[in-house]
Length: 290
Image 1: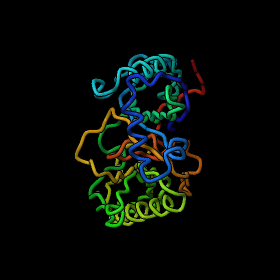
Image 2 (image 1 turned 90 degrees about the vertical axis):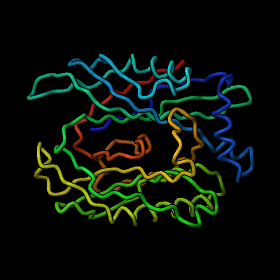
Image 3 (image 1 turned 180 degrees about the horizontal axis):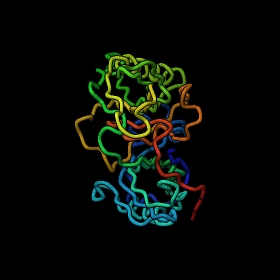
Image 4 (image 1 turned 90 degrees about the horizontal axis):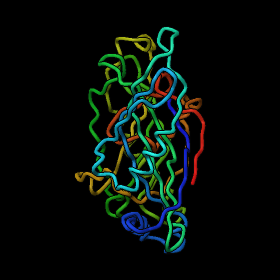
């Protein structure tokens, strides 16, 4: 199963955080400044690997492209990760160490002219498996940018849940969440979300996959995955480690994923994330603050 937890929150001085404020202000240009500041947040998605021992303690972890992460964020993460405790993993009924990929969603919001609040809002963990043990992409051409969305300057990320049949074709698709990088009225944002969601889902129905042929999922018959689809005008740029304007959309679970505890927007664009029986680490509930 996937781990998802709000772990800690902190208030920091804005010195060195002008990039965050600019990300919020840039995304909020379409709305009243005061209303935008109250509604908008800035997000940063950080990925890496983590090794947990047989007792559920963190043995080692690596943050991808650490040199691109602001020093304050590095310190914030290092302090939190060091204290994490996981449910002990098992292999053949015995406690065992586990190595997982991790995806961490950081969110920050200005409080006033001098301070911001930063929070590690959600986490996801996925075991590293050899080829053949999980669903693999065969044809996943990205959708084209909707013309009207491009004309309006609308960007954001659609989090799709897909059900894949034994022939590798998409049997069903649900847009679970659409997060925008633009601020507008409620009706405008609803239209923008619908525009991006319909475009992404229509293309996803054409995708093809290779079902797993080894391991305990090989005979399941159907498989479910999440796929984040990003619509961005700076797609060719490496924005890893940068704050981006973030207007989270409502969450609508796929009918076949109602018992799954993952938060979709803690997933990085450009990968498949299994729903349900992933076997990933589960972070024990905890909360730390300062």
